[in-house]
Image 1 (spheres, one colour):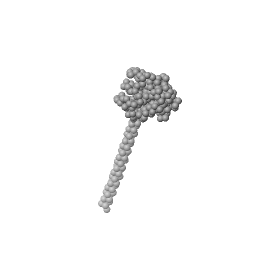
Image 2 (image 1 turned 135 degrees about the vertical axis):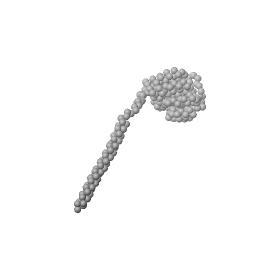
Image 3 (image 1 turned 30 degrees about the horizontal axis):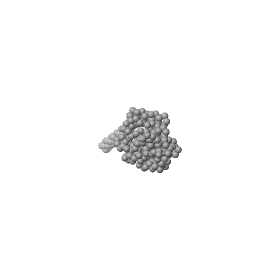
Image 4 (image 1 turned 90 degrees about the horizontal axis):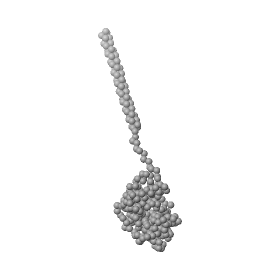
Length: 294
């Protein structure tokens, strides 16, 4: 009996020890799990803080600041007509097609490139008008089949005007080539006005004489019109051309807009290529003369 009690006691003791060990092991396991979970939570928290720090750093990173480029205040609108296209097809005539400005090109009818240059100019984004030959007080040069003379009848003048417009179908208006005599004649200018009125075109008075009645006749007939203010290149000299251009600039600043006339010449091209970009940066706008009519 004593042996049995001793064995039983030992068994109970062993069972107790095992249970205690199991409890200890379980607590250790739970503690390890808690530590593992805590480490994971700490890791997540650290990563979250790092992400927030990166976002804050990104947001607070100074942006690259570009200087604000303000458009210069508009000082004046300048319209430039270049006369005498039609008889040349070279680097000078093509050079005018490369100018970065709204310009109006006046083409003389009756020349080899009258029609083709009109098409090239319009395709390049420029405005085209007919540079209509008219009688001078002195000798009248060239374009005999188109020139308008004071001793012609109405039918002849009308036919010549329509033929000129037919040869340059891209034209949306007209100005006079020479014409110091014809532009002062009521009969000639009335015929010009009637044809332009019928076609819905405009007229720019080149003012080759102080006695011109071109602009006033157009007003009477209801034809949109305007006048030339400055000739740019009567003297084929770069310094003088530049001075005339600056007169045109000052006129545009004073009156709001101004129209200048130049010719398809190398020196005129050179001055305009150089000065137009500068003037645009200074606040002057170059526009088609069709937008300066009254």
